[in-house]
Length: 250
Image (cartoon, rainbow, N blue to C red):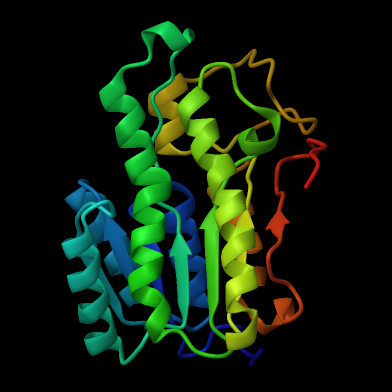
């Protein structure tokens, strides 16, 4: 039997009730990890992911709440540590977006919600999980190709994804002496419930990558597995780009 890449690792993943987060959770469980999930609202999807993880013979816990809520993040971190005996890997994947063609029409509430969900909540949760990490632990953040390319409909979302890149690089510098690796994954277009809900099924999307199709969440999840595993022992402060061939700088 092949060695499992994440045997007995304890993982906390945000936004893991669907899409990329779900794919990462299931892949990590297949590789031997116990998984705690933070999700925002969809109870049915979260319970399905929990059942799938448990069917793989791993421990699973789900926590409903908003990563922008400091008290929720604090309580959830303590519960995960208590239940699992620690946290080895943090995957910051939760996010939201509100497309808008004209900056004049951007709604203040949507701007603040996007920043709170995508970057402020990420920093808050990471701050609380960080003291529980140890040498060999890993943090992986979900950014996006739009951090490098921009996106005419996603001004505030793109800005948060750029902030995630900078946060990743800066925290990696701070974490080197502790032996904790901090990296990010920047997918291109991915077929997830969020993108389908936001943009629908756009067959003639001019932003399609060179592969001429959106990635599946499962195709992106393998980048997270690489960064979480000992295979990436020399990788920190970096961003992987599973984007179908879009050339970006950084």
